[in-house]
Image (cartoon, rainbow, N blue to C red):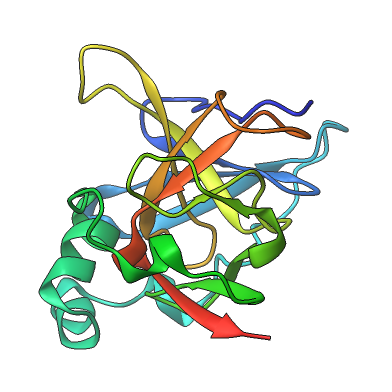
Length: 178
C-alpha cells in the first residue's frame, strides 16, 4: 500500500505521481519548483509554467464563488454534509473547481460517513501534499498539482486497496458525468 507523501520542508508541497514534485512557496504568492524523481536527477514541474500559477488574488476572486475561494485559496474547510457531491453516484470524473484538472475517478469514490466526498485514490500526478499543523495533531493536506488549490486532507483509515481516505471539500470540486 502506497502511503501519502509528506512535506519536505516547511514551505514546500510534495507532489505524488510518477515523479514527486516539490513546490516551494516564495514571497508574494508566486511559486518555484524543483522535482525529485527517486533517481536523484531533478526534473521540471510539469505545471510550473501554467497560467493557473500566475493568477492574482483578485483574478481568483473573480473566477470563484466566495466559498470556493475560501477553500481553494485560503485552505478553509466547508461544513460537513453541505456538498451535493457527497451523494453523487453517477460514473464520471471529479475535477478541480479552480483549474479543471481531473483529480478523481468516480470508481474510487466511497461513502466515508464523514460528510465530505471521499476517495480511496487520486488520479496519477493530480495532487501534492504537505503537513498541516493547524490542529493539535498533524494531518496531511493535499492540493491540486496544477493550480495549487487546497482540496482537503488524506487519512490512512480508508478502504482497500489503498487504505487511504482522500477527504475532499465538495466546493473545491466539479463533477463531469461519463
